[in-house]
Image 1: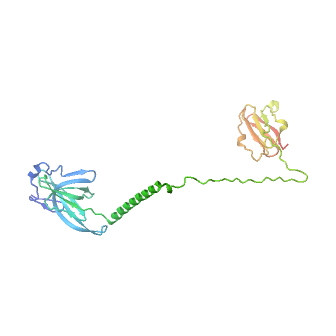
Image 2: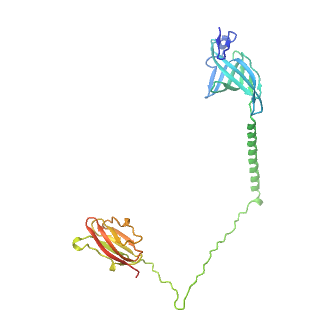
Image 3: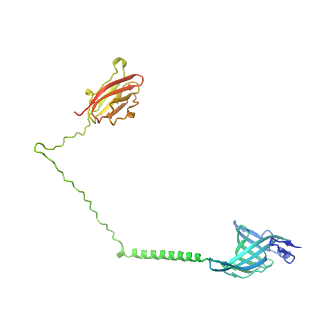
Length: 310
């Protein structure tokens, strides 16, 4: 009775393991022939077939590497072939050897193409009760890996040496930096004060008053029968900088308009003055101004304000 494997090689009765060997404790069986550890780590147990050994050039290490390849055939308890797993050991050297027909356990990582890459293979007796040997592949270390490792060690050693020297310097009181700091002197320049005089007069500074001038108040309330009910401040006069207040004493909102408009007049602030509220403005420009208190539904009243320096 024969059966073909994927490589095209058939196997016959001499390839079939002894079924009696699988009846002993710890022997190979269909449920424990392949175990998965994590996502890609696997453990495969079975019989070696198609063992090959070759050399491959490796430019990273500058020498050839040994590559040992074979397939692990797994059988069920009746001796029927249930699976084949390709295996590869790759290293600078390989200790030990395996042959077709050996019973092995392979621990490694399975790639997407199904190949299991292992670093060692355990060789067992036919009943899987005695470990006969271990075949190992020596790791491949590239030149750049060696250089990087040396640089890391040197950098760490330099860091430690720097710390030791720094600590020893700080421990010596004679080498400690001075704890006193230089005193900074701030010099404020003084400007000379000069007073110019003429034969006929002496310059003097007029006295200043901290009390602001009293505000000029204008009350606006439209009264058709009484002529509008407009009241102006004393003589309707103001001085530059003196505050002028328009008070809405009517019963609806009003706005204040003025002509000619001063340079800093704000039309938006003089709108929608509610009953009882006040709009204030301090004139900077001098002159005679005509103001108008406008009531939307009642009408408007006007007056005159003279702004000049007393």
